[in-house]
Image 1: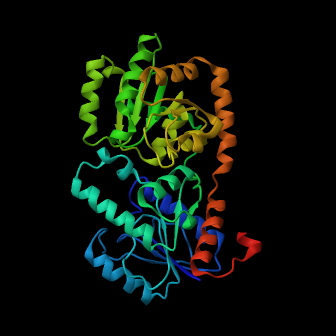
Image 2: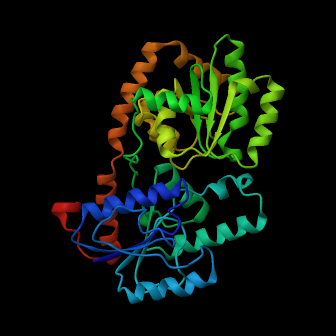
Length: 375
């Protein structure tokens, strides 16, 4: 079987990590197959997958040209099945296609995509993908329900396959590295960590109001907001000034993987205040770095974090503050959450993700599964 991965968005911070880990896990799990990795130009070193064919065509995402060139590439390389770990598929395909639809965020949270034209295009492409794909993979049962609800997709062709945690995300113990990162970002006391980009659904304003409550309770701490805030940072800085907490908040901007691991490893607690998450990687990343997690009870987060987190209603800042204060003030609770987080991580394993994904490829080709390996 020859399998092609469309990895042209591998440089994107969120979906790119999924693409990299999935391609590496599948090719390692089943080296007996042939693989074609379609990467961005110059991206041949981004995936550690030996004995695979890698190409980097000049094909812009969402372009007319890709609709012509992708089928040509698939025919030329005699591909048996295409996996798009994003929701875009060529309209004409010489082989069956499997698509990963991680979520339907811009349909469920239209405020995250202000452009009406952008929302319309997103809806059209998502609907086309859900119809054209032989099978759809999604990250959570919650997302599966939303794909059926918003796209009216056939539930029988949707497979929930949990992704794993990037093995590069792990606890840092080197004191020099930890001190370097503390100095770099101006961290001089215990801190609460929130990781992610800025979008309205991420609910940063409620987190700032919750942090105000924490400071007013007498706790001396910093709030570290790690990730590119783009247009949201100015608004959040103004809100922090209005709340009288600006001097206690650190906006890091984009953080590379090494710094991110060091930040996770030193945080007193990691918080995810989102209204909507299709999966919630940051909760698992925090657990992988030995950090207790407090998160929203909305959407997929309880499914992913399980019993290893404390939960709050994201609409109530005082409830966010209450749960964070519990963790900040109770060493025994922190230890228990860290231990439960380690156990929870066992449910998310890239080798198992690869085995289940390979089984979907067999079903897409309507050929029997090699039961001893994939059943």
